[in-house]
Image (cartoon, rainbow, N blue to C red; front, top):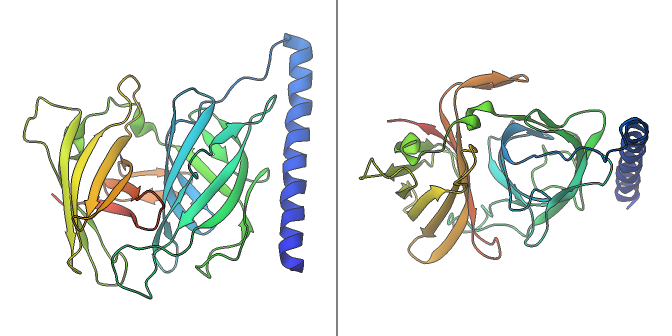
Length: 294
């Protein structure tokens, strides 16, 4: 109980420090320019860290005010996959007169004590806040942080720490599903030694908007569905995913790919597809970072 109270206090103190700092900066700027603080657009694809989790983040918006986030992550030591998602009706929003964004995420972690069928443990909630700069950085010390409401299931994750994400410039390209065509492999998914192979097929090369996607793993789980461009009028390479797990459970989510690159100490050696999808109540989850194989 003492530890929980202390963490909540630290999180509140961090929030107040950020708002006061941003407010002072904004006030002096407003005095000189008589204009409100500039809005930051955090939509697009990002990569970075939430505590000890490396993640590719996909942020979308319909009104440039409310941003929906889906972060596909992998733990540093165990290499276990996970994903962080805004709850239904909840968004990341910019605090007025500051560059600070705040919101709530839910972590979807697989229940590996039962059947290996992509079912999840009860959702874990964490609050996040951090400053953002359009197409540059979201979060980063010292003024950013996240806080779980309960101890994370994975013991290597910190209950309270910082996060940082860098904008991935690959996504200034025009989206095209043909860039995703082929086979993608997620190794050690659900359990060590289990591999999921996803195949994206677009028989009509003139159609750049949508394609079929299917997959199977070594545990006889199957996926079938479609993948389509999420944005039609922006360069963000984000794709909507609709899948049926084992011909019975509907999963929806997002996907994006990153090219091999070095950014902010992050090293990606191969073309990688980040994919995350859940059913309505998030009791089933597909999440992973897939390498392109052919």
